[in-house]
Length: 268
Image (cartoon, rainbow, N blue to C red):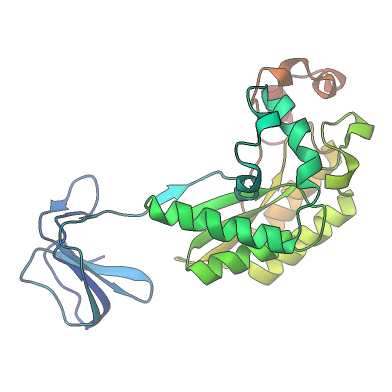
């Protein structure tokens, strides 16, 4: 970015000007300021009267212009069951076990619609970048649907490919209908990385790997996922110590370890 009073050398693709207040960062606020954008990046900011030429100009009169917010954790598909009465007022585990059967109906259309609506809500609140942790996969290509929604809305999206392999039959919490085998998880994780992950600065779509929690997947999958992430140089993401129920959950007792010590042993 150029200095706060220096316009970009070339004409900008987009100029936003006349802001009531332009907040550049923690040290710079410019009343009546402008910002220039080219190639999806801010190329200059400054005070009124120093604006560059631009192909498109937008007036922000009476408005506050700030850097976009970044949301580091989300489950966008869950807005489809927001405020579902039978699930409210219970513990986290009560909420999950009530909603898992509904999430078992998730398909590509539902994943796309929930992502489109969720991203629109985030944008309206000033958030321009978000990750999303989609860990139920009753049907294939749900993350693909979310990425399509991100591209259609122009939203910067860091999709985290979640996973669960321990169903209630294996001592886990979810039903079999929303879990997968280790081979299915790893194959789809690699497919998503090679298809969509863009490592370049300013990328609009990136992919990370996100086993749901240490008690929702096997130790072998957690380890294999970390190795896959290392091989492709992508990030890892998970849940840990979300609720007091985890301290007494049978899966943790079988591991003979608390969430934090288990994370440490597995490279957390």
